[in-house]
Image 1 (tube, helix red, strand yellow):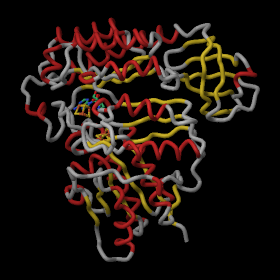
Image 2 (tube, rainbow, N blue to C red):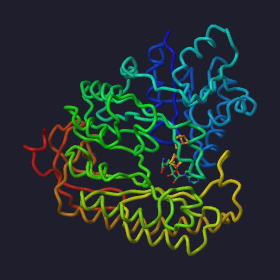
Image 3 (cartoon, protein in one colour):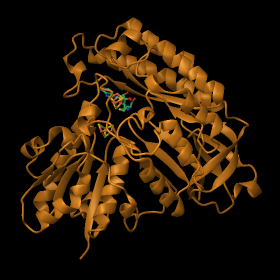
Length: 452
Ligand code: SAH
Ligand code: SF4
Ligand code: F3S
């Protein structure tokens, strides 16, 4: 009889990719993915610890799983990802109904761990080592999707793991370990296999892609991120290429010029600034200034005037004064980001800023966040209105009776009516007729050209 697995993913795209890998590994052990937690024999929570709230969500879901396990004693519960890495054994103490704790480098062990449980060799399994010498296994053998998964047209490819930047507020260096780059040959091989299976859009993933190649990537020639991007872009069949995330401190001219030189590199850049005040950036251990950030934005726009720039911002970092915050607001006005993710600062385990004095009051953080988000919303709407009347290339994501949904190269969602039989992954030219805050609306422009 087949077994059913339910995987719930929290946090970032690296976790999404890791969840896919777990699903693929488990498919080989006969596990079929299900959409409902209550239908599962195995529940995996792939967790995030970036802010306190993210971690609380995990523990509250684990709490609610206790009931399901009482009614269904055979149910296995696994905790993976950054909370697993951070808490280790503690998870069993707080949540004794958990069977497996598996860290961020150890997810490949999951089938073996489950096997030992199923054969009753052990009662609980934990594997949370973080190894400096860790290498990401080649994925060829994992590439087949678990059965019953919808055919996809875009995929994430992890190019590096971990982070060495030690921003003072961030758990990632401790939950994901030291920065490790995957060998170029493995990445290219994975991209080629994906394209051969019909994948049209690739997003390269790493916490800090600019320093790709600085740590144990095996290549005959030294390969920086711009070189890697150029090689991936040249793989026949890669119609759209994106990447995330990039740290402004070592954003090179070569990388910025890729937006001018690589036609399939989408004109979209997520460039987290975190704060607009140099004093705050310094305490965050971000190694750039506001001025350098603005210079990079200007340079980027000189190579690719229509590039959509997005960012991440933390408000209420310890010691952030009203004047510091005004500098963040001012930076928003200057750059006019197409969109941003903004967060209230949150103390995290094993981070330096947790010990900083001058914590900003919760209420003040809330007010600053609101002010930032209100202004960003207005700017996003104005940015979206710049698309009115323009004809843009859209990659189809879904077709419903009510119309089609797709994405522009700039990563804006577009809704449009399409009488043709466009499939997910097809490209269409759409003329934008309406701009909302979160999406655009349009009409199919040129059916001939569209059905490529
Ligand atoms: N590698 C990326 C960020 C990954 S974490 C980079 O260097 O920019 C995603 C975002 O979460 C960060 O950009 C930051 O804005 C936010 N974040 C991280 N730690 C946080 C904390 N302790 N409190 C609030 N927000 C945090
Ligand atoms: Fe965290 Fe900084 Fe690394 Fe980004 S660069 S993952 S914010 S430590
Ligand atoms: Fe969260 Fe870990 Fe990603 S903390 S943001 S899941 S690297």
